[in-house]
Length: 173
Image (cartoon, rainbow, N blue to C red; front, top):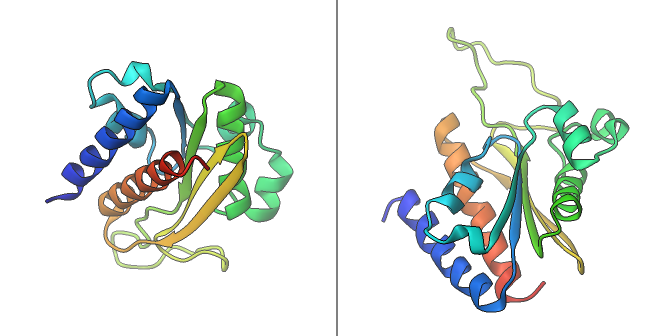
């Protein structure tokens, strides 16, 4: 089974749980730029359980749309656990959903067309991603390091976000 089929299967299971409970989710996305939201929309009836999608690729968007303090982003960088959690919390607050998932990270490329590596912040490594979730009861974050090209890292991030969200809903976190 390829990754797209896995993502879709987990979303369908998630959709059943949310629909049965009358609960909703929102997504705040940086490196995936709407891929999580688009994956939700691939499931018929998603308007019953998917409320909002925030694409906050830039630091400015994270501050304006999700209410993240620009000083936190400057201090920690956008690719950090703290910013990831604030993204999920901001999406939850601004959407009124029951669950929020958020992703921030580095998808690459990590070198130019001549193979010369781009300078990375020393706190970062290629493929570093933070997947976060939030409810009114609290927030969780998972640090991941994915390998592969840009498209592969983004797909792996979507799968990890869906799995985190599904776990949160199943366990009523």
